[in-house]
Length: 209
Ligand SMILES: C[S@@+](CC[C@H](N)C(=O)[O-])C[C@H]1O[C@@H](n2cnc3c(N)ncnc32)[C@H](O)[C@@H]1O
Image (cartoon, rainbow, N blue to C red; front, side):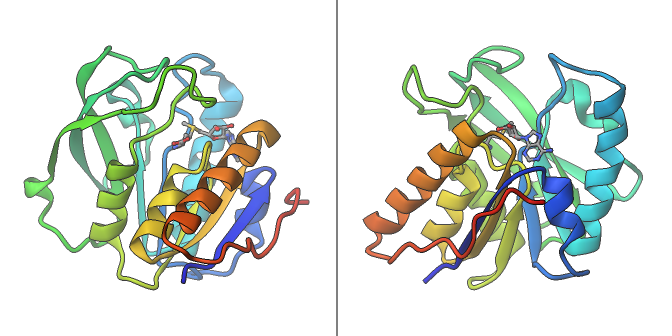
């Protein structure tokens, strides 16, 4: 049974309260900054990356081709997945390659990483503007961690990483700053647990303060 802990609040506050190497992996889909790029966001990037890398030996996250170079190098690798997307904010339309940034030692050879034609099968009107496919998050989780591991998603949005963790037998810690999205995540993760007949009891819910 997966343990699920959800925080409503700023992920930086939550991460600063976590011990070094306290989870096996940070797997996430941060805001890309495509439509709101500003100085605050530029300053925030190295802060959240530093916290994530302090907390976990493996950090993996999706980004956009144009924002890939925002992230500290040289010690990352990147792999690419091909996305067929109906996401409202998807840059490049319906069929494009998107990068995944990876820090840390992963189990698979990097040059073999190619994910093809992942469908964003979310219905029109899905209540989050940029959900990731569950299958993509499952793929990252299954290649980056073992069963029973704990995964942190600091930017959980509608909770896709949490759904993928429950489905693959990983524990999940999620943070989301928007109460609207937080509630959606809570519901989706509960539904994923119910489908597997797993009792769902989030360990804690706080505003991160
Ligand atoms: C790209 S979306 C993640 C979408 C998610 N992968 C899904 O499938 O629904 C990024 C999320 O990060 C949240 N966010 C932005 N800044 C945050 C912060 N400082 N702390 C926590 N969440 C934050 C946004 O509200 C947004 O829902």
